[in-house]
Length: 162
Image 1: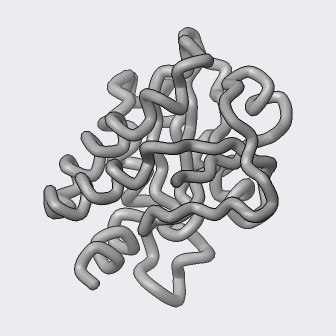
Image 2 (image 1 turned 30 degrees about the vertical axis):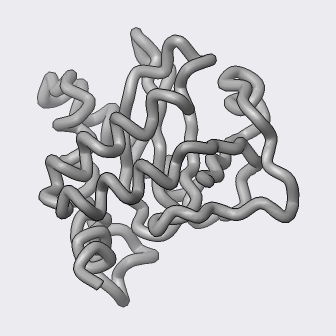
């Protein structure tokens, strides 16, 4: 089971089954957070609670966003050279997805930084490929990771190697 956390306005748009207080993510990466970037077209920004790995994908149609997320994540894990067995196991655990309210201010702060950087990269560099933007954001040093592996891509690689 996967728990996706977001603000009420985002959760209302994406729908899905609401998590109970006793529900918890069974995936190795744990909970994910989601927000919407109001670009044309709108983009969903997912950030992992454990590794701070960012994943960008089209927001529309909002009603299928949670169903489309596992395949997008799988593609990004492959692009980051995560072993196929690990990425397939992670996606297999995402068969059931539940939505819940946000629980970490730290992750929300990182999401705001990724949102800003993604907008800068899109405007200044003309980068429109969401996968390329996600991979570039994954190399960003993040304060909460300074005492471990500094950036989300390195944190993910360390987690995958254990």
